[in-house]
Image (cartoon, rainbow, N blue to C red; front, side, top):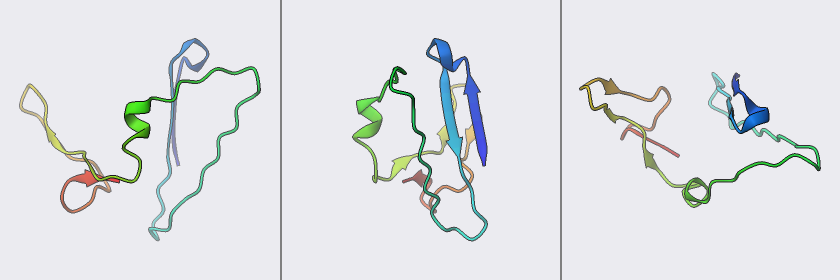
Length: 76
């Protein structure tokens, strides 16, 4: 389980990346307190369940490949 948290109290990022050797789906439930504000990006929410590009080339020419991506270079 990889967890990234950066200045969450001031609008930073909280990201969780579970990975299982057996490929079984992991269900993760993050429950916030009633008084906590969070932003749900509708642009990302609209893509749930779709295959989106994950691999590519950065402006400096560096290739980017996502570990665990689908064979076509997308993630679901």
